[in-house]
Amino acid sequence: MAALSRRGLPYASRMPERTAIEAAWDREYEHGRYRLSPPLAFVDDVITAAGNAGVMGSPMLYIGCGNGRNFVPLIEAGLDLVGLDVSAVAIRELRARLPDRTDRLIHGDLASLPPDARFGGVVAIQVFQHGDRVAAHAHVERAKGLVQPGGFIAIRVNATPTELEYRHDLVESDPASGYTVRYREGPKEGLLVHFFDREELVSLLEEGFDIELPVRLVTTERAAPAAGSWSQWEGIWRQRAPA
Image (tube, rainbow, N blue to C red; front, side, top):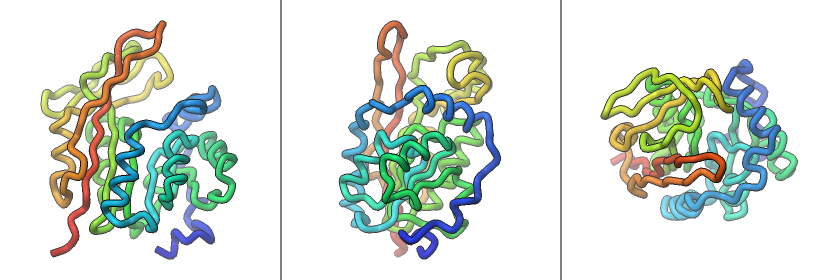
């Protein structure tokens, strides 16, 4: 893991081309998204999983680390995290909060990592929703490949019970494979966003992984004047060690 030493990340400058997704999240963070939000309760489960896997001292990866809502408390709990996010604004804000970890915070996506990168744990919270079903599944598969034997992966994704808030067009739908919409308004206007069915997510982690935390549904009521609720699936899996 020399490429992930605390002395620097030689691949950190390999930035992907700016995309509509990056631009959308830059706007969100510029407008204060998550700046004052408390961490998710899922953070405690991630800390427990890291302890159970015996990887507290190993480099771990947080995909979609944002401006630190969950990343900072995980660092404070002792996890050695590399942060990855497509938003330059988020990375800039997080570097200001954690100046001693500047070389561990990467502006980019999964393509920014070297092909042989492996981590004791991979955390992906509300980050695999972008794109259609094929793209969302590819994100999960790539993340699985980053987990070293015996390590874990913690995932939180959009769930099909969500009551959609903004106008949208249904792009694809399958009872066993969730659905994808293209938003016509709101912060993700013009973007494809996938919502997972429970069994769809479970099936993606069956090969090579054992369940650490069974998938559960977390539903949050929107604050007025918005109406309805949004839902996510949360689960943690452990990579099987070679026989």
